[in-house]
Length: 374
Image (cartoon, rainbow, N blue to C red; front, side):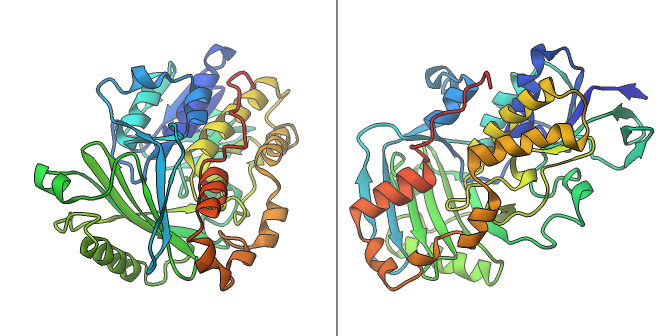
């Protein structure tokens, strides 16, 4: 049985970032994922300049052979009423394809990897964790998304007592005819909020690719909501009529709603496995990257991997993203004060859609990038 100082389960942005951050720590790391890379990943797919800075990615270098769609504007509306378009005057985000982005990050990792490998068993013996009867470690890091098997160690299973956002989306390469029939512009993602404000839909053009989807706080009639949205966008000429038939589903937890612990004896969760997606927008890439960087700092300085020693990670998360207790007082993805009749009016305001929805809730421009040397 091979021994590692830590094993990271999940090779997405969170897992890859942690493994890379620990490269010079002298620790022997195993990065494990159930899929082979590059792999298809259901995600609208955008990253802010803060993410690129924290990862040390030069956009000019990254876009060589990959999709990198500069975003300068947003088109935002409530379903059933006209949208508002705001021009930010500069690049405020980038559209990426997760199959490319995740593979790029994984390629930067210099540690042992076991891809296309399912976690079949987890046992705790003599102070160490044993995975699949093959690998042994004192520290397991869960980075495998909402349904990460490591997250199950810290409770009775993901989603049992938590508000889960369910989403369906499709991403495909458009034919020339489809591209001509698509009025949505690459530099202007479209966000359309459900009238009950329990979710939103999007139309996101990234070069030759188009991503369309809808996510809600509950799974009630999700397909019906999505179908109605697609029909409306097709009639409005925003998207081509001949979309792929199969939309893929995924789920995640909003930070203010998740109640799973972040650490336990010899266990630590990062990214979506920890339920760190931003409460207002559901965006999870930046929290995944930043949680991995915070975890790396704690892992390198911790005297051991006890729950007490690892609790500093939870404190760093709370300091960065706020305490969940305060967020739970708001109780929903959109603040309660916005669930009033004024919501329809606010959604037609250029100031509100730009300053609050886009710059504060989706881009978090008031929060500086997390330094890689945390």
